[in-house]
Amino acid sequence: MLSPAYMSIYQQYKADTDSVATWLANTAKAHGYDAEASLGGAAVDAAKEKKKKKKKKKGNENGKGPSRAKNKKKQEKQDPNTKKYIIRVRDFEAMAKHVADTNAVEVAHKTAIALERVRRSFSQKLADSRAKSDHRSDANHSHFVEVLEKVSGYLKPIMEAGLFKPDDLDKKTDIKTNHPTKGMFDVLNVYTPSEEFLNAPDVTPTPAAEPETQYTVEEEVTREDAFFAFAALLRDYDYLSLEIHSLWEKYASGGLDLAAVALATNMAFEFAHSMELDVKKTIDKFGGTTIFFEAACDGMGIDKKRISPGAMCNLEAYDVATILNLNTMGLFNSYVEHSRDAIFPSYNGAFGWHNERLGSGGRNNAERWNQDKTALSEIFPDMHFLTTPPGQGDVEDELIRGMGHALKTKSESNRFWISWALQMYLDIIQRLGRHVGRGFEQFKQESLKIQHALVDLPESAERKQVLQVATRWNHDPIFEMKEANMEMGMLPHDSEMLPEFHFLRRNPIHCGLLTHHMRSVLHDNGVKTVAPSGGLMVTIQLYQALRQEGRIPKGQVWEDLEEVWG
Image 1 (cartoon, rainbow, N blue to C red):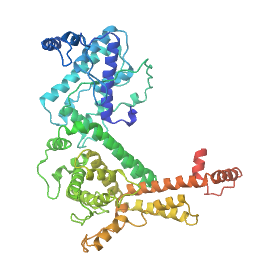
Image 2: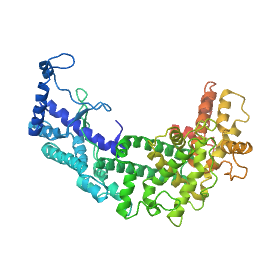
Image 3: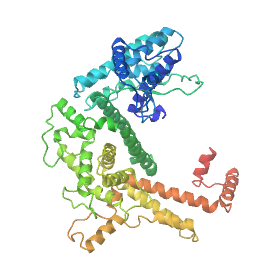
């Protein structure tokens, strides 16, 4: 299981639910609980009726008589995906009562915390956020919460929830009061523990004699579950967004290296993809992200059916659509749908051109939407080209990989993560503004530095490999392909073309990844070159001797080695 620090909110919620189910079922059975003997009156009647129907059958397909079938022990139902055994909601209360009546166990600290978090009712929160609901799903959800309340009541005498105070969490929020999705995120405050709780000492569980049988809760996915899953995913993305914005702000001020920031950003995109996989099936069952956009519009009094000219939604809802990543999702899906079969994709300026100086500072939603639309329209064809055999290189970032996957598959599966990643891309280039090309300049200088360092070295396989990587972007393959297409008549000669290296100028993330790749290849092959001859060891020994004698010139410290030595 993932460490809680690396688990999404939805993963933590499901893990808590399964943790409670597993502890309750195993503890109850260890103390003599019999699931069949403890069924309620209605369940017993239903079970008897079922047995009567079975008695009418003379045998089964294998020729075995009813007496043999009768003696066969009923097996627990197992989830085919997780391989966990399924526990019925109606059994929770009976098992909790049985465990409490034994008065022989104490509820584990970890289990008590999980129960406290899971039992919080989301119904009122959902109503406050104006999410659509239906009576059947709300009844199912309320029943589960009611059962958990009773379980907590039975177990309260034998548990101590410690420093976790769920009532206090309802008052907590790190979302501004005017945030369009504040109502959604209020649902998740129960997963924001207090500082007191976080600083409490860890409780080491007693090792079990043998592995526990794992259980999960029998459940029917409701609209409320879908809403919670989406709100959890959106909150996780919000956390990642804050971290990404912080990293790029530090880069812009000169505090962080481009390669490190780009690598962290790309890893966040990959992490976001895995988060969506956890909840996508639940969300899509009720119509995907569109229903949440509609709920938000209804709550804000915006006519969701009125589409603004040249836009994909009512621009009054631009901010909400941005938070829900619907603007980038619409642009991405539109490009994929219309350009999937394009041999040489290009942008002719049909929507205008992105204004780097303006960034995200449009005077109104229409200008801000146009900035988003033109920025992505300019870069989509370049990303598309880099997914094809002529354009593929050693470095493929998550945006390019996502574009390639979408172009190859007609299903819109797993598109929300890339919509969020594209919104992060827009945030980065628009916040950098007229300095957006700084990343390309740094990459170019790094490449030239490596090439110059290898000029006087003798020919070798290692030198050749490093040069291949360092010179990959000495010429722009995207621009050269467009020029070749124009010469062959595949593009009109009067078509307006973006300048050379436009893709790299507008993509500091990709520039940072290219820089990291060059450095990695250089270091890897550098070690292969000097290590067998003893050159590295001798150099370190000479440096150490000079260091001990205080003969290292000012500004000539071997920083990497000093870092290793501490």
